[in-house]
Length: 406
Image (cartoon, rainbow, N blue to C red; front, top):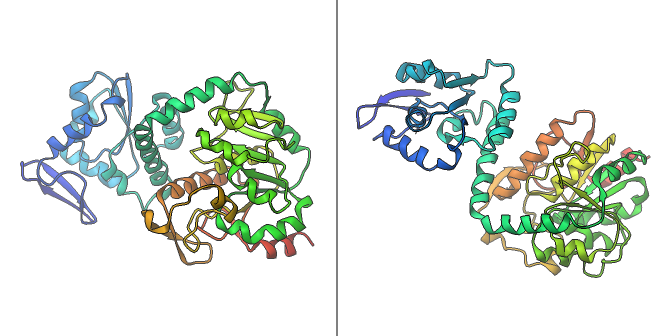
C-alpha cells in the first residue's frame, strides 16, 4: 500500500495506492510551489494545515514565517513515514501535531478553522483517508472546493456585501421569532426543493397539505402555487438580481419570507409579505444559520431549530433525473443546462442504482448529511428520487402518507 522511494533529486518520496504523495522528481521544489500558492493563508500568527505528508511543506513554511503551525493528520501510517524522513519537524516548538489519538481532534479542528478562517490542505495526504474516514475527507475536500469558488467569484462577493448593507436597513423580524412560532405548531415539516421529482408528488402533497408545515425554497414556489399549494414559509439566500423573478405574480402573498442578510435586495424589496432575516449579525440573540451555498440547506437548518419530530424531503434530488435537474415550472422561468453541458459524476441513488450528479450537488449533499448527523433526535425521511442522502429513511411519498398518516 505504501512505498518509500528515492525521488530523482535524491530526497525521499512516498507512494500510496499507486499514487505519489510527493513529487517523484523534486519534492522540495514541489513544496515551495505549494506554499507559494497558499501565501494568503500565511499572513497570521497561527496557521492550520491538514496533511503532514513527509513534512517538506511544513519545513518550507518554517523557513518563511515566525508562526505556530497546527498540523492535523488522521493517517498514522503517514506520520510514521514522516518521522523516518523528517523527524526534526516534530521537535520544533512551534509545530503542533494533532493526530487521530487526540480525543478532541474534531473540536480543535473546528475551533482553529473558526479562528484562522482557512486551512492549508495537502491534498495528496488527504486522499489517503478517503476510504478510512469519509466524514473528515468530505469536510476538508468541500472546504477546499468552496475556497476555490470564492477566489473565482470575487465579483459575487462584492454584490453580496452590497445586499447585506441594503438588507440591514429593511424593517423586518428576526429568524428566532419565526422559529418560535413554528415550534408551537407541533407538525412534521416538509421541505420542498425544486428537483424534478417534486412534480410527481404534488397531487399527494395537495391532498394532505394540512397535516404538515411546508417550507419551500424560492425556486420551488411557483411549482407549488401553480398547483394550489401555499407553503408556510419561503426561503431565500441567493444574491443575484434575477432571483426577483421567483416572486413575479407572487409579490403580495402573506407567506413569511425567511431570507439571508446577503440575499438579493431587489427580490426582498418587491415582496410585501412578512419578512424574517437571518445571519445579519454575530450576536447570540439572532443565531447563525448554516447555508453552505444552498437555500435548501438553510431551510433544513432552520427546520431542525424548530424541534420537529420529523422532517421530510421532497424534490431534494441532488441529481439529474431523465436529464433534468429542476421542475417544469422552474424551467419555464429559467434556462436550464442540458445534460451534455455538465461535468457529470456518478453517486449512489436511493433505489440502489447509480445516478448522475454534479460537484456542487455533492457539496450540498455532504452539508445536508452533516446537519442530519448533528440532529439525531429528529427523524429524516427522503421522499425524493435522486441521490442517496445518508441518515434518512428512503420512502416513496405516497407510501409514506399511507403508512404514517393512517
